[in-house]
Length: 76
Image (cartoon, rainbow, N blue to C red; front, side):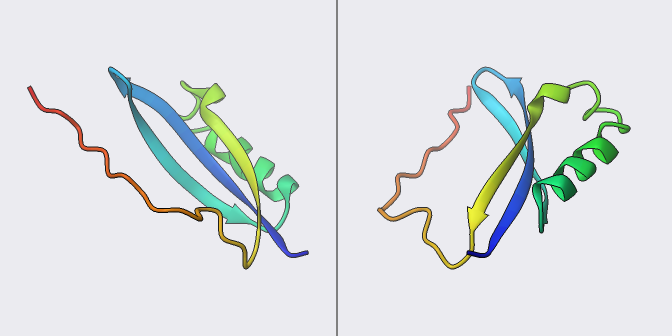
């Protein structure tokens, strides 16, 4: 089984609105953790240290198997 580890960062920027960033794709969880440690040195990331998430994904596998609904932001 071939896997990769995605490092994400997310934080809330408004009423139920988040700013989500894919930081990178890594060959191991340890590499993703090292990338997280590097990012914690930067303003923004260090202010939101709980916003990091490491996800494990198998290669050559569908992760979204159905249709989709598009959400649009309402403007006032």
